[in-house]
Image 1 (cartoon, rainbow, N blue to C red):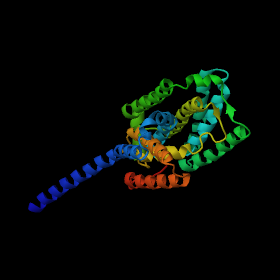
Image 2 (image 1 turned 90 degrees about the vertical axis):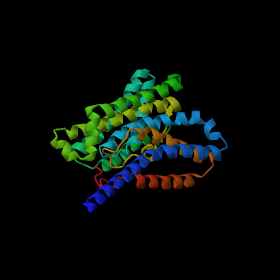
Image 3 (image 1 turned 135 degrees about the vertical axis):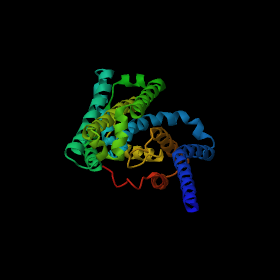
Length: 322
């Protein structure tokens, strides 16, 4: 009888310890963001705080694009084509901006959605792993971008600068976040998304059309990045041959820094997108303000990235990257 009671006590202690560790892991990205901001603000003698408007201006594109990849990673997939989607959609926005600004926005979203559908088709219908499909797409459409913008940047209409205001860019970003949050937390679609990431076979037996959900997620991810392309052109006014370059890496680092489990599933939280994007931009700007070389910045970012992957990786499901 005593042994049974001791066993129960040990189980309770183990559960309390695990609960504490889970809370600590969930809080780590927010704690990290606060610490990084304070440290870099001190090291740069207050320049980090005075440049907060610049940081806010830089976060729009990464944050909006990260929402789509967040959905993809929630179901256990990966998407390395976001930079190329950004490039193609940015060129479309530039080309159509001279005709009509609403048409330019719609054109960017549609262009992104079509590339997302391209990814989704080969991933869902041809059963090719998501990271293989999207890496191929990345190189394929990067070639188109180089071809269309190699001689000179593709310039947008001067009208785009009328939209380069904080209320418009912030409004688009907040709208994307709010709508995505509601869909993720309070709709059947969002529930199915997390369930697929946790265990696709069980969801299939429950009658959910998993292939349809996965295809729609890639279309949605592309469309969201197409919208981010409009914000990108509003900021820059043209699309160069390097537009969107390394965006997929920035998004992946941002999501992992935000505590996003690589394998997706039930442990995913929408806050991962916001906190991670802020942490990445603050970290990147802090390193630049300190005058570090590109090599040193990449080294520091790589070390931090590995640490966060080690902390937040779900080792039980890590092999189930679709």
